[in-house]
Length: 255
Image (cartoon, rainbow, N blue to C red; front, side):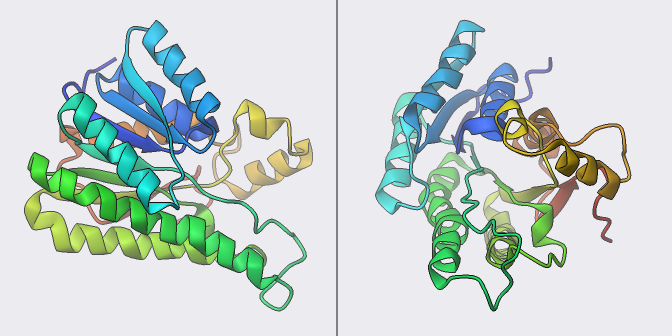
């Protein structure tokens, strides 16, 4: 394994299936990782695995949609590791999950909560992290989005809107702060299967996801997202910014 993130400190906001894989990959690449999640025991379990493997990491309780919570996580990274070089914002609410609900049927409380967490949360994370990156002399922000933000889904309208809002935020950061050596990019997965999710969804849905992609042998894995994230956070990715990169087996194809 290359040590592309050696000497860097990375905040991963959001543990769980994808987030834990991100933290483990970044630590394996040499980064000092702060892993934050609203479920602190989940973050601690991942950090324990990282430390047992010889990596450097710590866990913090993090509600990415609460300004003081994300500020505290940034402060922890700066105090413990002397600064911050990158953020991977990876949390989301999936409350907008009714397969029968379109714009006419979606309850406004579901819409409001989806935007509060997914759109406002990424905005707050960005506001909290940018000063630390600028003080460091630059850095990288990676946002986890979804293929829903690029397509035209007939359901999950609030979720898709929240993800598209994240794309706009990413481009703003890339455009406004690029001169300060701050980069911003988005990874847009389609279905990304991990054990906890696999236990919750029917096999027919997995087969549908395979049929929608051009690669038919499997669906996405958290390691696929982590591999791209490691590049985007590293110096090897230092000329990549302002991009939405689809890791979806060809489910979407865009110019």
